[in-house]
Image (cartoon, rainbow, N blue to C red; front, top):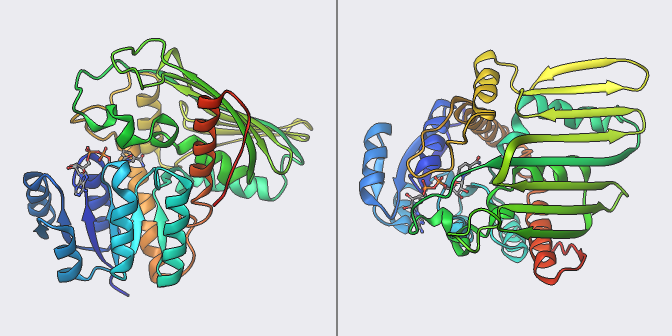
Length: 356
Ligand SMILES: NC(=O)c1ccc[n+]([C@@H]2O[C@H](COP(=O)([O-])OP(=O)(O)OC[C@H]3O[C@@H](n4cnc5c(N)ncnc54)[C@H](O)[C@@H]3O)[C@@H](O)[C@H]2O)c1
């Protein structure tokens, strides 16, 4: 079997998950690097690989097949460019980049270099969401009419002004930093034509830039209407996507880790997001409680580390088979829509989505 040598830049909360998941998937972790050398050293010891204080040394010495990027969002573009130019395939954590021009440039560069470019949209790789994709492509709901997505929870302000996740210049803001549902809408439904969005900060005033209520209205090129409501000012939690069609509806419920297909003719089918008892249970247990992830020094819940393993296996299998990955398709779209939504919030008008 073809061996895949992997290097990691960014050894924080999620970089650590990626390192373990890729090792478990049969890839060989050859080196890690981080601005925080102690953190990189710690991970290198745990994973029995080398630590490099400079990313360019890591690339030059190890010549990895694949580079994993799990650094601050605003650094993804520069590091990915460097890795692609060094002839490596690249896996970038979400969000892909902070704007559509950067993501377009990376896609072009990857094509020129003949290298794969993956974005860590891990929800796409879960068995339940794969089944949703198949059901929609088989027209199980007939013509789609309207879709509603919600990612609503309460999160207390983090009392750490220096933390990069509180700095909108580094994260790009919530529409990009928490891009998973927007990505699922784009991946499942097609290209978005235009967007109207509004946002405000009602309950997290310590961080003036940190909108805690975001409402987005999307009009797709194929005529579907959709909405996305997200934020951290919601005392009653909700995390789901409902897809309505002429023949029935599909409810993706992240709280119960289930997907329910209900057809107007009276048939009903239910399946789980993971199809693995422990992972489905972990998601259920974590969903409704106080949100503990996305905090400084957070530990990773099992459902998320298991999703990372499923995703890593997918990337390694696709690289071995030299086949186009579902983590490489339509990776640009959600960034383009997020950029248009941010512009709409600023201008107060509907914005056409630009794809390059
Ligand atoms: N897919 C998901 O569900 C998911 C979950 C969590 C985080 N993420 C993404 O993973 C990335 C990392 O997030 P995190 O939670 O691990 O943050 P983190 O703060 O725990 O880790 C980030 C690490 O990157 C390092 N770093 C930053 N810039 C660097 C540079 N230029 N060179 C070398 N090292 C650099 C920092 O020192 C830090 O150790 C982010 O893009 C985040 O959005 C995705």
